Amino acid sequence: MEEKQHIGKLFDRIAGTYDRLNHILSLNVDRRWRRRAVKGMSPCTTVLDVAVGTADLAIELIRQGKASRVVGIDLSLEMMRIGREKVERQRMSDRITFREGSALQLPYEDNSFDAVTCAFGVRNFSDLELGLDEMRRVLKPGGQLMVLEFSYPRNKMVAWLYDLYFSHILPAVGRFLSKDKTAYTYLNKSVKNFIWGEKMTAKLTETGFRVPRFTTYSYGIASVYRATK
Image 1 (tube, rainbow, N blue to C red):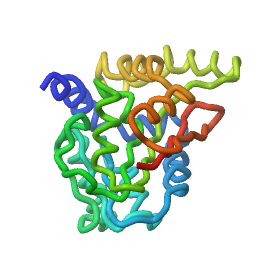
Image 2: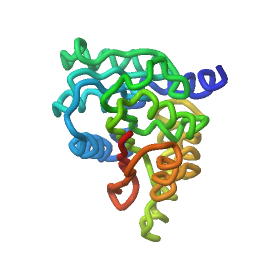
Image 3: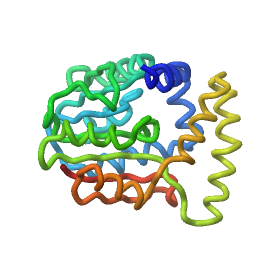
Image 4: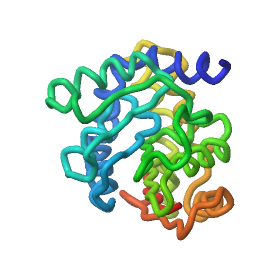
């Protein structure tokens, strides 16, 4: 309940401007990250997209032919409402469905999905290990996990610019456009406080995933993590 009140309501408040802000603040690079992350997946039948949000990743999975059916789950009803509208415009409603629910207690049986994906959502889990364990639980044996998330640049100059952007520019622009005083400050902190790189792959190993690996995008600003059950 606490998770729903905090994360779900936070994203409900900014849902109307979320997509526009993401694309503006990332100079549309976030679209390319999703395309590359999905391109590296093997085609399968059923995919669970955790923290589906406004369905950009789910749509990309169908568009690239990586899934026959995608089930999206999220705590934010307003984000999913916008996602449904996008899916309808793409005429994918028969292949992408939505369900309210928590990543920490997925409402599915063990071994239900061929793949589980999550884009820019795992850093918001109140219990990362539990969330990853749930994702592994609902995966079929041999199923693939793909997680796309912000990370931290190793290059000192890029890291300095990254800190400047995330600490000052993004929160200010986010507050101005979304009219929300706290959401983009929270998003900034959630990125800076999250694990990345080798620490994230170690966490995947601890949770029981096999052969975890990661690839960085855009000088390390984002990373894609892949593993199997």
